[in-house]
Length: 248
Length: 244
Image (tube, rainbow over all chains, first blue to last red; front, side):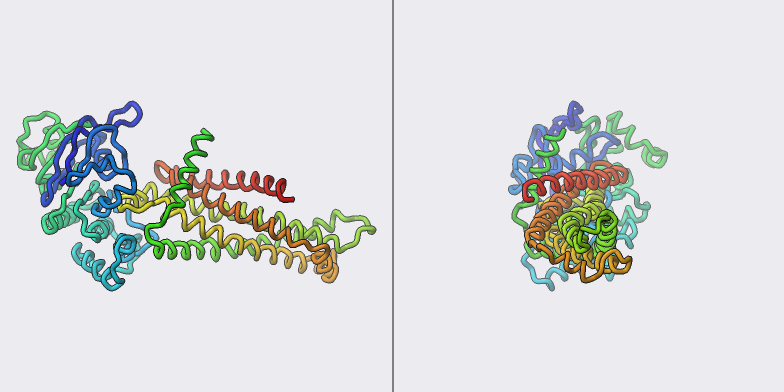
């Protein structure tokens, strides 16, 4: 479980996050949504320690991650898997080497055990027999799936996904969404997804936080989202004609 | 601004030289980088060294118009110029373009495509993992390249001198061996190790802290080459002043 308590973050005089508190439970897909510039990416980067916060707490199962130094963060970081918007795969390595990389760095397993794990993870994301392909030879959807395979290689307790559907066609988006959800439930991972894709939100958003002007503006399930009595939430949710025609 | 970057560069080096998470993985990276930096640069170093040696021989001969000066002095001057200056300094200036630019653009691209963030989230010291192998590989392989460059530079002069008639082969060899002092090799290697370290670390620093996109990656590479070149020339002066 991840708990945020009054998290604030500024860049120079611009306060991007204002006293954000929230709880992300394991086994469900938690989503952070909001318009561009609302602070979603900053919040995610604060949660994974890429940005230091100015005030507040970020608790990973009771341990305040924000107060730890680089070395003290390592045990928690080993339990974190991250899927980046661009997948952030190492393009100097092939598919197998990418998934193998965290195992090589941190596990004492034999090479056979590591390769078994790599093959298991690739099979789990429905990618088989592509171990030796270069990253540049993969499609956008395949890159995301390799990214997920790498993220789950170390059996993480926490999974973060930054815009997992960006740049993907609707069909592939649904495949990626369902994959993240299945993995979350199967391994009881605390998953936090940063998204502004309403299809994803309605598909897999068990617990949603809506950010507006750096504040936790609304919180609830996707079924409550379409009934929210909140102007900013409604403007965001029903921005597209499809959503309007379907739910309004 | 200078002190800000100098302090940040020192902190960057402190992070680079921390205990690796996994020696085996680091060693593999060092070997890979040695291949890229060393073997990959052999061709360009061979070409510039042969021509530099040949040109030095011809231009030295051109300036020695008096018949009172023995011809083998061309060999002495060519030897000292090639070993002390051209092989370590000119080679490193060329390598700052080839290797330094490559290090900077590689790290810059990794930064803007979030690959460095991915390493940090995994709990890996990204500075150490990405930069240490490059510095170690540069400091090991570039002196080897420079030794090859010295040999090829002298070979270039030895071939072109008799071909153009400015000096005979025997006179050239006699000049190269005349008053031989192996201290010049020592000075040249000190220079090379220092320049290699400066070139690889400054280029890595420029690339590692790239912000933005493709344009900024290009800017970082340009800065890496310019700053490395200026620092190499400045260090060249300091070493010459102190050791010679």
